[in-house]
Structure formats: structure tokens, C-alpha cells
Image 1 (cartoon, rainbow, N blue to C red):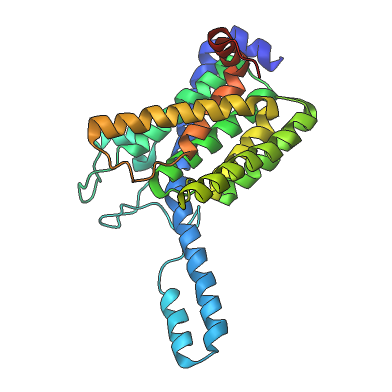
Image 2 (image 1 turned 90 degrees about the vertical axis):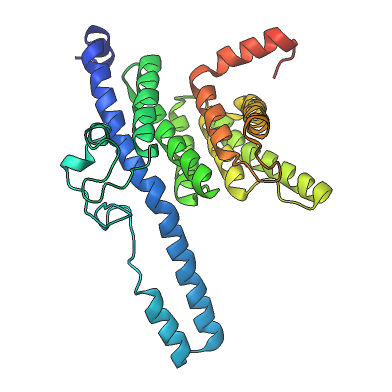
Length: 303
């Protein structure tokens, strides 16, 4: 049976399966969000130690430093097993059921009763919710599979940027190449628009960065933002970039001003731009034409 026909005839079953898949993916994204920045810091530490070894020679102090660095447990996405950060209790399968375990444990570790961050069920729920929206919008098919990969990647990038102000190359660069690959088949745009979108996405923010630094002497954003917009351009084409930039700037400004007014946030404290780029990029993939139509109707301008 054709997947689209099956979805139309069994929508309840299909959407329920997508909810379960989204919760499971959200649980995995929580692991990526927590561990990937740690892995990056370990890699940077090892690289610094190698540079120090090269500059100081292979003396005793250098060897001692290297030994101390390896006393710390190396972390990967799959090892070691998940455990409570407070007491070290290893999380078993029953305690690791997406969303349900958090509810059953009442948001506390089963062993030491320390609080579990609300972020874990929120990421799982958001992943399931956005996955359902994607499937509902595109139906079942290859376009949906590509859009889901795009969505899940943006969720991980957004939360990591909020936590650490980092946009890891290990996600942004594969996302860029995947965008080019899916558009070889014209899934979201033609390949020419995709390639130009990747180039224009990176270059546009890089130029903004240079102008802002020249005018203020400060760095207004990081290189990860350039790569993220390049990836979004690869997925949606260069035609969507003006809308993405305007929409992300609007969202960033609105939330930034809101935080300053309502919570008294220091205006000198930087706000990560990645989540706003991600939100605008995701909206452009699903409802880009409709958003542009509203913009044209309000302003009379076309792009």
C-alpha cells in the first residue's frame, strides 16, 4: 500500500506512531544536547595538551599533565550509560522511558531524589509535537523524512546554543551537506538555488559580523551562526534567506526586549541567535510561501 494512502486511511495510527517516534528521538536528542558540548571540550583539551607537548618537549611535567588529563572519563554519545549527575546512579530502562518515566518518578531521581531538569521532558514533548506537525503538513514520504531530519537537527542545535552558546560543526556541516543532497532531487528547491543559498547564507552573516565588529569593536555573533544559515540556505534555497533573516531578527529582538523589560536582563549579556535562525528556517521549510504572502500584503514589497 502507498504510504500516503495508508496515512490518509489510518491517520490516528500514523500520528500515534509519529508521537512515539518523536518522543524516542527527543530522548536521544537530550543525550546529544548534554554530551556533545562535553565531547567538544574534551577534544579541545586534548588538542591543547598536544600543542603544549610540542612546545615543551617530552619532559616529565608534560607526561604528568597528559596522564592527569586521561584520568577524566572520556564521554561519547553512547558511552558511558546515562546516570544521575548528582549521585551517579545508573539509569535503567524503566527509568528511561521518554516522558512517562519523568511523570512516574515525579521529576526526581529514584535513588537520591534530586530534581531532574524539566528540560528533558520538554525536549521530548517538543520533538514529538514538531514531528507530528511535519508529518501532518507533508504526509508520509521522502519529503517528510528529510523534513524530520532537518527538524530534529534544529532542535538539538537550538538547545545546545541556549545552554553553551555553541553551534557544533558536527551538526551544522552535515546538515548543510544533507540539504544539498536532498535538493539534488528537488525536494524543497532546485539544486542551483540550494547551492547559492548555502553560499549566500554564510556570506551574508559573515559580512554583517565584519561590519558590526568594525563599527563597535565587538563580535555580534559566532561563526556557527554563519554555518547554520548556510545550512538553512542549502535546504530552502536563496529565495528564502531574506525572510529567514528578517524573521529571526524580529524574533530575537522581540524576545530580547521582553527579557530586558520583564526580567531585567542585562542588555550587555549576549543572547544566542541560533534558536531564532532555527525557528525561522523551520518555518520557511513548512510555510515559507504563506509567510511571504503575508509580508507582501502588509508591506507591498517583494523578494
